[in-house]
Amino acid sequence: MSTAPILAVRNLYARISGQQVVEDVSFDVAPTGVTALLGRNGVGKSSTIKAILGIIERDGSIEFQGTPIERLRTDRIVQRGIAYIPEDREVFATLSVDENLALAVRQPKPNRALVNELFPELTQRGPQLAGTLSGGQQQMVSLARGLLNDNELLLVDEPTKGLAPRLVNEVARVLKTAAETTPMRLVEQNLFVVRELAQDVIVLSGGRVVHRGPAAEFLDDADLIQRHLGVSGGDDDHATGPAHTPSASAGEVSA
Amino acid sequence: MSTVILLLITGIGLGALYFLVASGLSLIYGLMHVLNFAHGSFLTLGGLVGWEVGRRVGDGTWGGLFVSMLTGIVVGALFAIVTELLFIRRLYNRHIEQVLVTVGLGLATVALFEGIWGTDPIITSKVPWLRGTTEILGARIPNHIWLLIACAAIVLAAIVLFLRFTRYGLIIRAGVENRTMVTALGIDVRKSFTLVFAIGGAAAGLGGVLASVYYGNVSAHQGTSMLIYAFIVTVIGGLGSLPGAAIASVLVAVLQQFANFYLGGTGDLIIVLALAAVLLVRPSGLMGRKLT
Image (cartoon, rainbow over all chains, first blue to last red; front, top):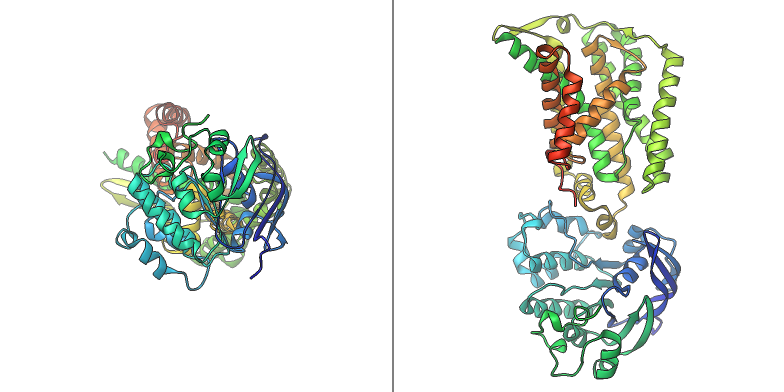
């Protein structure tokens, strides 16, 4: 099996409305498993994903499966097999659940059986407007949109943000299933989810990469977690448990 | 009573005309955030070329009018497509430049139309039935009003069905709500931009031919004067809302008719005041999404 990175980012800079939000970021995403992108709130994690997809203005080199994609439009990048599951769900509120899913289909035979198996509730809510769903249900729609197609890479941004602990476990289960077949780049504040899913971590601070390495090694080092994320680590800490309180998750207690 | 009925129905007819222009403006703004000041030129060219072709087929006949309407639709759509591909596509998200280019195009095309067709209105022939009236509850309604209402209703139904039951319609509805997310699902939203321009141009081109029926003439300035009302309608209805544009078209035109008749020709003033009131009370328009 090839060990070449599926995604190689070099010297990435990104701006939103002229303001620098990502500065000289370089990293690789392994061809299998989950790479988590960590950091305090506002350090540029979501912006990095958006920059990779061309949603925001960016400079630098981005190679996907060895091919440069930094000059491609967002839709062309996604058509190459990169699915984006955005922060805050971003479902189309005025469209039904069925229409949200239909819109996401990019291949003649979408993975409807997989989606139905993972999200049985959505099959009953097909005609319902997505804007009337709960936050957890909207997250299911958002994940389902990504999983309907055969992807080469999943870019998942804060999938458990604002969800109740029971739903956090549910989302983690779905992501684990998805990661069995597709490499994933995960932005996540909840260290329990990171521990459950990720093999590698990349930590950003001030728009730059400040740490990279195996996830287990990082999560077992309370000093590293304290220094880079501003929360205390350790297995008995709330930040690494499924029933974490919002105030104990990495980003929310930090600046 | 008959006066009220007359004003009401002729107001609805005028509203139909406004809707044909405003529907395209609203869809274009909703999806692309482009304020298209050249939209009136789609109407003018549709009206002028439609008249040229229609009178050669049969001046003042149903056949001539039908060909004229088809020509207006095709010319309006083609002009809109060319405008989108040549000018707007290069200026996505550059709103100031878009306004400058569309204002410039609107002015330049009017000058071009004046050069070809002259500066004076050209009197058009009407189908005999359209020159007559139909009595409704004592009011003698000009027959051409029914044509306007029927055409606008067909256009409204066609656009609604298209948006509701086709994949491109789905993409446009989603794009009006969150264009970035549509592209992030791997959809080339630019094709939808061109399509929306074509639909808007077709409706405006048809509006140009129907305006010649309503006013009894065609002129190089018809689109420019209609565009002002269409913008008012679009803002009152809610930018990006097709039902909003339909409802506001009728409300504005009926209000205008009543004010012109009962308040000494103050229709234009009244609708500008209505626009101001809507902007103050509900800045997103009657059916627009709330501004954040």
